[in-house]
Picture: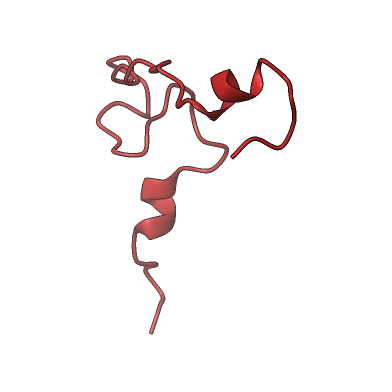
Length: 58
């Protein structure tokens, strides 16, 4: 069902075929090396440090 008479409407309904490449691994020697949360840039606060249990916790 079309909502307008625009010739672009059919094109806009099609799914895009653009695929982003998977992020590369963090560089060796950086604090993010081996981190499963690496997405191409370093986090503002390290998720691995936040997930570790605190020493004085309950």
